[in-house]
Image (cartoon, rainbow, N blue to C red):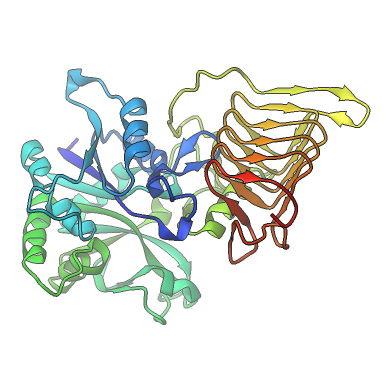
Length: 411
């Protein structure tokens, strides 16, 4: 195994996920019951044997730092570690001004480890990937940087960095969120989109970062500046994510990757998990997604008395949940949720410690930690029940921020 240092970029604000990011960094947002978004990137690296990992944090990083520190513990015997690294202002009294600047300000980490290659991965995507296969391809081409690319519909090009492939796997052009771009040869309705995962030759990365840091016109962004600069010198290649073979994957979930950077994309990825045949399979034991072990008791469903029956259908239910005479359908219940008698929860995501009191209705909603829905209150996405107090996504999902209280219809 070549010497590899992995850098996970986890300093983004996540403005499009507000209010879920009002009090936490985007990679710390809960997902799928008891996971955090950062767990997916870290699990892929760990499963792939990349066991020297630093997580660069910046905005509202307290809960993210706690999660990484408490959950991601490696044996020191072989020098393995996962550690959060906050912005340290090593290059002057300034925060990170972009993802490339974040790495540049932490070049001491690369100098200490002296790796042959550096993985720079994003922290907030839902996917499985064996990074060893990408590294093998990177070494075989001798590229200065290899960019993981995924095929997406051409009409979505404005959401991504778009890769145009030249001879072999060499990147001929890299455009950041163009309004239009040609399709792939042989597949005109598709494009290669950057997944935000890169593997660099260490010397090439260090040189590119120094050049970028000296440029006053640069935005100091990995995808917007570093990769295009290396494309211009012919030193960038693409790795086709569709070729990645993850142990235990099926034809249905192979190649799954979601950027959950908006409330609607977060909601839709969550709802996929509770479908009868979800595209993303949380239950692949050959490539597990790791997270903190809960000390909560098992979930409990109580009462079968006339119309009062505790039940959850087509749902993910975490440890410590009590459904006491309420009904839950097509929803994700995080640890410690309570759904009381006569309450109805449908098509919703309830995060840790949410309480839905008797007779309340929650539909097509996302409730952050410790939200309380008072008896008889109605919160229904797609309608007017969210009132002016709560955020509503473009597709009508109503979102209640951490610790808030839902007091009635039209709140």
